[in-house]
Image (cartoon, rainbow, N blue to C red; front, side, top):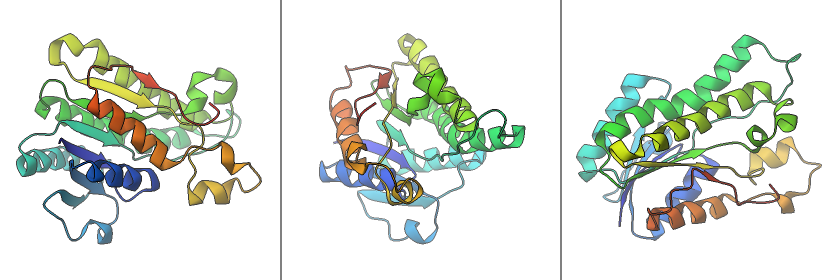
Length: 223
């Protein structure tokens, strides 16, 4: 049993991760965007509503999680959002917004987590397939640039592994099968998409095997 912080716990991916990890007996400290969803904490599922773009709020959340469970052994940081568009279509404000949404919300938790987590702990970040190919990246410039920072953050954590012995993984799914994605891309074949539960299964596998220290996990859908 481990104590795991999950951000975006009320999202499609975050809720699947919470359900899977709870079913295996882990304790969850869930961070929610919606105050209503953060009500009614349980002994094994503590809930907190938070704005993760606020560094002080994120740091306080990690402190509360550590106080509630004694220590945090794992963190699954799922908060983020998508935006399309090539260089001609996006503005610098679009890029800054995507960085704030996809990178800042992760970094603001990673920094205090690195100070609190014991050796052998793991951090899971959510990447994006287009970052693996410049040809794909050209059509999602603001989103892709923000996700590139997420990959780099994981690389930095792993480069310093000998000092703190905390590992970082970047989950790189194909399109995640969620209601909003189906609505936005209704003409596509949903059977090629990865289910949130599949991603949750993979995260659980790595949590059970901390000796596996792959930086990038790309094993979902037709990637």
